[in-house]
Every structure is written in structure tokens, then in C-alpha cells.
Image 1 (cartoon, rainbow, N blue to C red):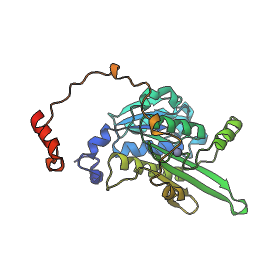
Image 2 (spheres, rainbow, N blue to C red; image 1 turned 120 degrees about the vertical axis):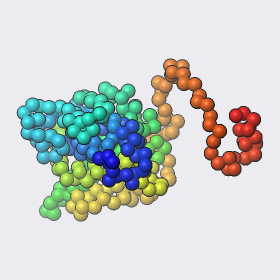
Image 3 (cartoon, helix red, strand yellow; image 1 turned 90 degrees about the horizontal axis):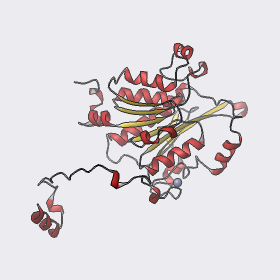
Length: 299
Ligand SMILES: [Zn+2]
């Protein structure tokens, strides 16, 4: 019996898969700290966590694991994340990047999946491009608060799963050249955007469920492209219309031939002799006669 017994429906080998998995978390603030906490609870073994910030008192309305003592100590957000993980997974493999994620691309390349809870469209754009280039699934979350005049405020958000070859953040309309240009223009002048713990929690939980579907799917046919809208006023998370429209569509923004590590060099890879093939090679009846003859002659 293990502490993960109640999630055994994820599969007989799920505990080992989760322990062997490495997740990349970019942004250990409001959204990222929720995901860190949930990944630790569910038994993820490896973490690469990037955030350049230190906790401040205005973060304590939402930063999971952060305390007032941490504010006094001006503790880096990545250290708070590591402490949260160690409390549940003492043997976790943790790489902390107290800076930009771009400073640790070699570590992020090793991740099985990357989640992004970042503020800027530029960061999202670069992160998605990086993940696709290295054939790593990328899950993006974000929230916003809009004024709706006399009616008050509207809390919104989105969760997107971006996989190589599938629709991307640009296909979804989340990233546009106009938004990137506007963001670059007001760089440094933008005030702090509103953030609350409960909407971050809803979005982060949804993202963690998508990561779990990728690592240890508990039903047949887990999705390869997800675009969900969060409406914090209604309390709903529903498929965006584009999720239906774009289903099965390829992405022209990130052609598949751009995928793959441009620095990969087979000559520098260690030599692993091919393991001796087992006689049992699957249901032979499914193979054509010439394939079976080849198997018989060769083995
Ligand atoms: Zn696209």
C-alpha cells in the first residue's frame, strides 16, 4: 500500500510512470505554485522550475506555499516551490532556475511535458516554439480580469494544450503579432494585473488533469489538442469554439519540419548496442507472410 493508492485507477504502473516523469514549470507564482503543489501530491518525480522573482507581500493573496515569513526573508519563489515538493516527495529530482527559463534550455529539453503560467505573450510564444522544436507537449494557462462597465468585472482564463503538429497558441488566436507589438510598446509601463487564488486554482487543476492524461491516461483516446475557456463569473470551463473548429487541422505557424533539436549530433551520442530481440515480437498473424519469413530466417 502506498500513499498513492487512491489514484491507482491511473494504471497498474502509474506510480512508476509518474515518479519517472519530469515536468517543466515556467512561472512559480499564482498559477505555477498550484501546479507544483498538485504535481507533488500526485507523485511526479522530476521538476525543472524557473522563476526569477522573490516573494513579496502582494503575492501572498495567491502564492501557494508562500508564508509571511518567506516575505520577510525575501525568499525566491522557486525555493518555496522546492520546499512544497520536498514535503511530499523527499527524493524528488529538482532543478531550480531562479532566473529566466531561457537560461536553462538544456534542463527544459529533458522534460516530458512543460507547463507555462507566465504573464507575457512573448514568453508564451518563445516557450511554445521551444517545446515544439523539442517535441514536448506544452500546456499554457492564463487569466485576466476585464471591466464590464456598470456590470462590474469579468474574470476569464484559458487552458491550451499545444502539441507538435496540432493547433498552436496562434491558431487559437491567443498570440497575435498585434498583441506582441502592443506588449512590446507598453513594456515596463504596465501595472500589475489582477490575480486571484481561486481562478488560478481552477485553471491550474485543469492543466494538471491534462498533464495526467498525457502521462497516465485513464480513458481511451486522450485529447491531443485542448482549448478551454474559463468564465469565473459563471464558474464554468467549456471548450472554446475554436477547439471544435480546429480539430484535426494542422498548424501552419510551426511546420513539423522545424521540429527536432537542431543541435542534435548522432556522432556525439554514446553507443548502445542493440538489445537482442525477443522471439516474441507481437501478434505474428497480423504480419504479411514475407515479414514472418524474414523474422524466421533472421532470428
Ligand atoms: Zn498554429
